Image (tube, rainbow, N blue to C red; front, side):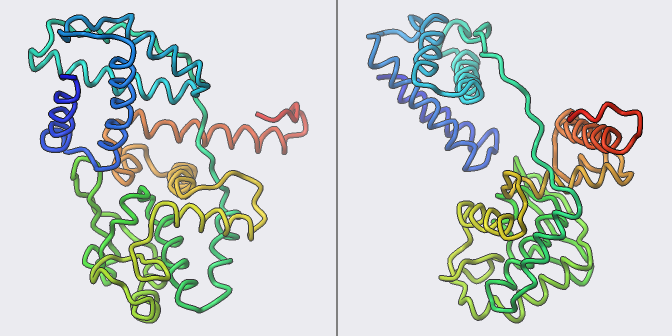
Length: 303
């Protein structure tokens, strides 16, 4: 079907013109392949202008019947809208049929955040051993919480991105936008120890990649997720903890301790300050919880 050809062109456009990351492009590709397959299985169009709003709605309904969550359906519809906008802008179709597609209502959930004591408990676990992987874990967790980097940014880091004598790290973020993040003394010391004492013993197969696994290969997202989950369990933390939790906690703690919103936006690499504002809601929620637990005339209800 001709849609397959336009999908390839669109993915190339996302890579070259929009400068999106490989993970983001892969997500678009998965969503749009499912959409195109649905169109191919259920309709026989000779002209792309025959595809209309109702066909997209039918695809959305089919996802709901397969018990996809509202957030998953919303993401897939967002990918479809972006694709149809591209088809319209390139004059491949006459009009954008996706503009008024109804999205399922999604409950906006706040990110999981660890308090400072919980962060300390996780970090303390990594200092209970001095074997190469333990030293790597110290450096990884100290850097993740001390810099607020995205998982992809953290795992893509190279030794040459570190400027430990200056207490800085160079980060290539979304859209190939570079930013410079300050490092705290604990992160600097953990990184120095890992690079000098542990990384050579792990026999890294890529000369410059910073974090490697026990086989010397670059540490994967799955590997990082399993590690942080295990550390949280060992620290007896009864929350759903992921690598993203360290980034969320970093931002929340900065705001709670007086950092201004614009600075936190810059440190996190957010393009839109509204994204950063989500963390102010977390801070307010935490304050309300503390108040309700501590004030004698509070109603003691969980917020």
